[in-house]
Length: 368
Image (cartoon, rainbow, N blue to C red; front, top):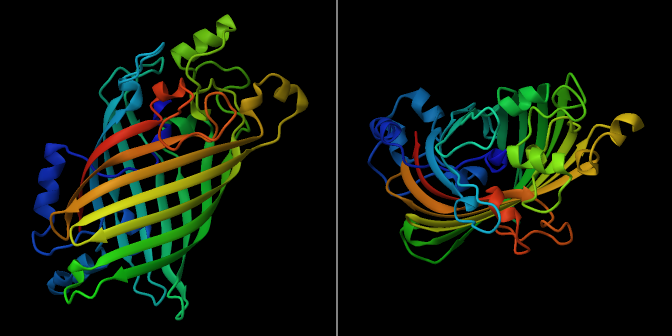
């Protein structure tokens, strides 16, 4: 499925939701608390929050985001073309629990609608994604000398997506730690006129639980196949765009546990920001009997590695409303020839660019 690259989204441009955002947010202030700063654990309460009700202050940083995406397959014309345009709504409420560890309770609700013709047999263009519930500690410990902050997260996954239900998922439990450091450059008397560099390195371990080790109804179940992939397998042909793990026919072995390592660097000054994020994910599937394994492609068993890169350029209108543009690419770690590491945004060996791994986005976000 082409939705492989969309676990996390930055905001976009849908008029009804924009109207809601403008009603809910204030027009005062000079700096926004965008997606990247939130990922780095640097979201701060705007100065004008002090006069607001206590529950509003505790929910500072909660956001609603609307997004528009265009996949690289929309412009790919060699051998295979797969246009992709979608819009998504991402809501992330957060509640400050008021402890010395800067502990907060968070949730993620995310839905997406594809406008182009879906490439799944049932023609479904609407996709809800799994709900996340988690506790985040932004400062488990602080090293006074280096000013490095140690953060932590504990997360529960509620499987509501079509993919998770097809995989027979019960839940996923995750825990991780992060190291965060913020640098400030310049001697301007006004903080907004100084350069800020926020960095983060994090690792999260996730254990999944299923009622069956295999997706679908068993080995070689074709109910989850993409049309072009099913035809190629039936004809025994090779070539064409390379499919991602979630693009393959049903029956592949479910993921037992996974380790995600991420690094983030964000540079900002006043209302402007530039951020890059790279996530490396290593997934380990369940072990199955030799007879079952013999019925499956080698790529459907064992370990799977993926990378996810984001480059985002943003501008903040106020403390609560911001816009950004960028590229997001989530794909297999190796190129379409399975020989070299894949370039973060485009597969220079060809083929896989048509799979919409890389997507451009235009974003609008509103933060409470």
